[in-house]
Image (cartoon, rainbow, N blue to C red; front, side, top):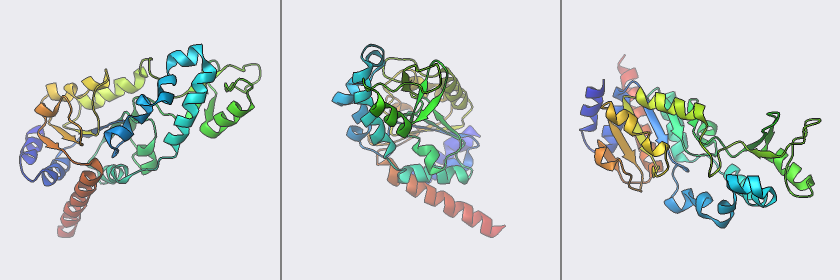
Length: 265
């Protein structure tokens, strides 16, 4: 199957080649960055802003009041995002049966909200909090209400006889990624026969190493986005363009091809 996918990617132009490869592949796995369809400045705002620099594991452990003062507005901003054209196109491609799984570095749950069913969130998500003592989970609005009620601005578990401070459900800067999510991402990458990288700078270990898994197995890589990656030199196709527009066009081409096939049966 990889030989056929390689052949489809060797055709041109690039969007038609990608659509053909998706139709030919049996297991296409997609890796998306922090914010699909955003510019570099927008996608890394939570990692470079003054607030974000205080929303770290160290701050949570040593200055929880300052942590929640910084983190909660960031979480609200993330929760306010809506799925964009790229998210909707990926969900469309999954429904068409040409994408198997999405691995994402995003913490906004937009892939799931757009309709993708098989999503691996390697950093978790920013839309809830959890008590590490008893495991009780709280939505973002519930967490906000607890922050408002707390004299020190630190939300605490409301389970009787617990009252343990909460923490975000997602991974914070300075702590390891959830082992289960990373292991599943590696398994998916190892069994892909087409690996598509979308809007990911691939700068942070271990996710920066993930494309090397399919690459060492001879699986073709495709890179889409406006920012170069360390894997560009290994990619069969590089589409240096906004991912939203590329995915919309590719989804349209796939629908047209599948519709033409159905009309001839």
